[in-house]
Length: 178
Image (spheres, rainbow, N blue to C red):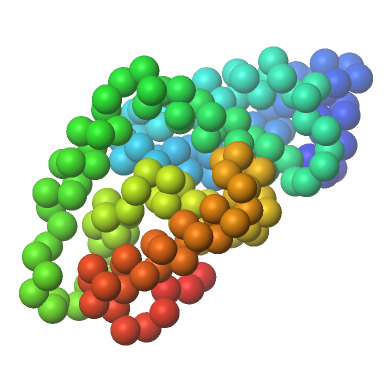
């Protein structure tokens, strides 16, 4: 059964099983996305839980235009923004990770999880979310625009600037592509 069919089933009969299936299908992606944004697994799990609660309450607002996962990721991103507005945790996290970024001594980095954190740490929060959605979650520029609310041109600019910044900062010669 497709996501859209499960949404319709939930809306018609308030089927708990239909919603549970949607959660089961997408919780790993949502939690992974939020963990990449926050760097804090416990905080990410809390935000993911809030995201699914909001989805439960607002499922009738899913119009069926675009993929369900894009709608859900938009909810997750909004929950993330609300959480970071209520707290300065995001700024402290960025400062802590940025302090661990190696000096520009020409050492070539291998792309593992620790290096990914270093790469993301040099980006602005807006650039970071665009890169995570595009590269880690395979969203198109249009889906990223829908998820974040950024204009399409802004999404493209963030991706371009991020690639340039990463190449220069880490002296990468190969293009940064998916």
